[in-house]
Image 1 (spheres, rainbow over the protein chains, first blue to last red):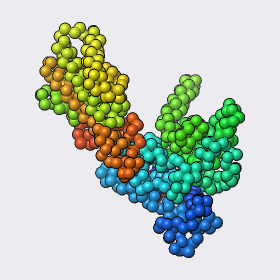
Image 2: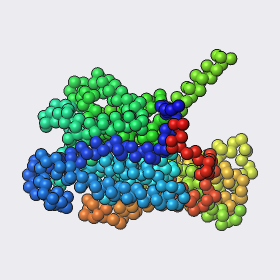
Image 3: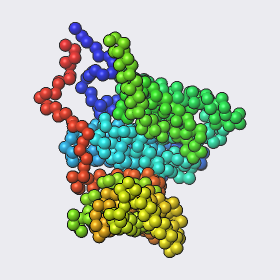
Image 4: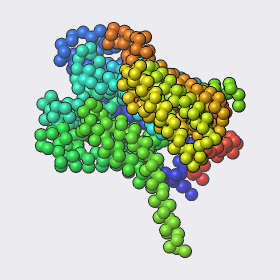
Length: 370
Length: 226
């Protein structure tokens, strides 16, 4: 007789939780592929606009050295150029992460934890191309030591180490992830993110006026961090995560519900001249980091809620807080990081109430039987 | 109980901030520069020594049912004196610290020492205990204040140590260090370090891990298809 395990609490295979996290790396591959091309394309377009003919530096020399022109139309050269910006940042975060992991594992006489791979990978994907070595080392150290190892590793931490590392980095050096000059690594060239453009300059018309369309943003061709810009990539990643049972669909759906409901409610009460607040929800979905955060960061199996109702509450909290930060914080619009941080802190509370309710219901059922 | 343990015990062995986790509120709020940390540490030491001495001298005539009220009155008197002295001789510091000098009244270290030590011990030992706990508190404040001012502004006591990037140097100020939550992280690291050094300060674990020997571990691969 063949038995199949379907739902959550059964052992399916020898996968443990830190190996499960490696599926998040596989799931982000579409985002990464599109993101590398996007970074290179943004640089090439930026050069045309700023009138820069020749780009100095080893990256451009390498791309031109193998015979590829730096041209926004050439997909391969754009991809390679973007990848050469990503590679040092990813390698730095990986080396720093593994070093901390080895140090703590040796000191505690425990096996190495594979979760460090996904932390380094996701952390590098959230960074902009202009992040410096020191900033990467600092953020990754915060992610590993304060975020993960202090609590005893994967399965024990309170908030996702990636989120914590990014938050510590942002609060320490806010210019890393903020401002029009960080997204495209050309000296003196400024290009705000589409989210900033939409909320500061005036909603969808402002985006359309500079030749952005919904489909272009959905594809991910916009200034932003390495891997976060593409909603299409996040959708493919979500499909993979859900098909392999690695992430909870309730969290993703909850975040979507939270976003749609909050945006619609704000649009009901907002005055007509506040164009940023009247932006429809399907534009919010492709702007900024909401899609990436919802699919890959909020679903962290350790930090998120674990009960079914708790996961709905957790997801809705992420969606609602993201929109509130986007529409009301005048200084920094990318609310999804703070939304996930806040929701992770409330996750044990969500679970607590759900478990209490379960106990109450079952006790009532038992008493009725007797 | 020796003079030495009463005076220096509260620095490492029984630190009011790091082990008893008292007085953390002020340690977060005023440690963004070394100067304010020093003034705050000295003020608290003065108040704590004064209140410990007075309460110990009065300990046989204070009725037990009224002791908290009398202790608070003595502490408040000390705080008002310190506040007035600061306003007279260090008006800048008094302005920077604003309400936090007044809030020494509510600092758990002062009342805690009055209640736990001065109410039961001789005047001499109580004075030493007040100085000792003030030292423990000041040591933490000075350490946190040094780290926060050095990495948050590149200065120490207002003197430039590392020129910042805006002034032509290489150092980029860490904005987190200027925010009170950074003191949480720093004090947390201190507690971590202190407990790694002095193991007896570690708390007992709330639960113990179940150790499974390798031969008892179930082989999970391929067994569920039988």
